[in-house]
Amino acid sequence: MDFSWSDEQLALRDSIVEFARKELNDDLEARDAASAFSRELWDRCASFGIQGMPFPVDHGGQGADTLTTVLALEALGYGCRDNGLLFSINAHMWSAAMPIWRFGTDDQKQRYLEGLCNGTLIGVQGMTEPDTGSDAFSLGTMARLDGNRYLLNGSKTFITNAPVADVFVVFASIDRSKGWAGLAAFLVDRGSPGLEVGQPFHKMGLRTSPMSSLFLTDCEVPVENVLGTPGSGMMIFQHSIEWERSFILASAIGSLQWQLDTSVDYARKREQFDQPISKFQSVSHRLVDMKVRLEAGRQLLYRLAWLRDNDLATPLDAAMVKLFLSENLVTSSLDALQTFGGYGYLTETGFEREVRDAIASRIYSGTSDIQRNVIARHMGL
Ligand SMILES: Cc1cc2nc3c(=O)[nH]c(=O)nc-3n(C[C@H](O)[C@H](O)[C@H](O)COP(=O)(O)OP(=O)(O)OC[C@H]3O[C@@H](n4cnc5c(N)ncnc54)[C@H](O)[C@@H]3O)c2cc1C
Image (tube, rainbow, N blue to C red; front, side, top):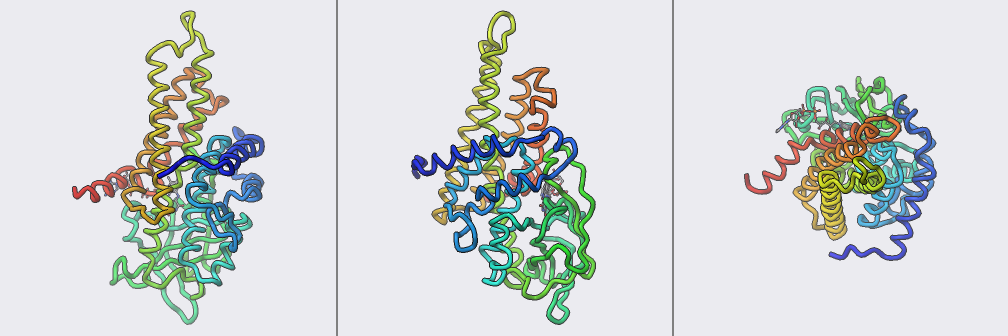
């Protein structure tokens, strides 16, 4: 494995940091307080090519390999403090565009993938239901074939981007007696008869990423909008959740770097007892722990991107990356806040928002308990 970057990759990273710093941080405190998603910032990212980064050029993407995509997302996380926007972008890329690219027909790719890559369409996946979260495959949403369309009945909850999304990858059962083998994935357009998007939820963090429920009442989905084949839903979900677990926290590496740089800078400048607080061992050791977590997470992430580019990645690798990055994002966000003392507790310094945003990472894409279960299974435990 070789993680030395080409001049081209480094130039891309630097240009994204500059773009993100200049273009993506407007009015963040106010947007966070108002739980407001910014379509304008979404469009700026799309114009820069972010949403289409790993997808083929002939479908409107940038054609970057996974390692380059991860570097780009890391750069975005370093320059942009709007973690909600980055979460929405990542959910869109990994849970909607990726399965459509991998399992879509030519017609589906033409109808959806180009728009998802250039940002004119917003997508996301609808799996979780009010009664089925971690135990996702026991979902209750049913799909019944009726002529040349399916009728979907059920509800989904905690759906990122739902208030603004144009297309939903919705999982439902076409035959409950077959269990997971009876699951199918459907491309459900916003505005489909029988689809109701719920009111936006109020959340602890990631507030600029909108979220709501979906209600499906005889929701009409044409047969040509089945993704893959009827019955392949479990395989499609497992594929996309693995990509999601692998890279939904790529931008968090940039956040961890920003938190560390900002905290080190502050600890050098802030004086107490006639010396910089960085000279107190408890402070410097806290910063050291942040550094080690960052570098370890970065190596795990790059390694997984390399494994994906070489078709060697396993569910174990994805679970380890998700678990490690999410738990350390929470810990380091708290450490950064602590380094700033009372100032860290103020909204204006941004650290309390970083903490609130970080907490969700231990829940979405499978909770930390679930990642540990996956890892334990792979260890034969
Ligand atoms: C910010 C955010 C964005 C999200 N976006 C989406 C989205 O776009 N689409 C979507 O479909 N879903 C989305 N979700 C839902 C998310 O996938 C679920 O919240 C998650 O899978 C957990 O399900 P649950 O909330 O029902 O918790 P539960 O499954 O009820 O779990 C409750 C607790 O029990 C623990 N637990 C459950 N089962 C086990 C077990 N077998 N072993 C050990 N502990 C266990 C859990 O770890 C947790 O601590 C999102 C959630 C969040 C917070």
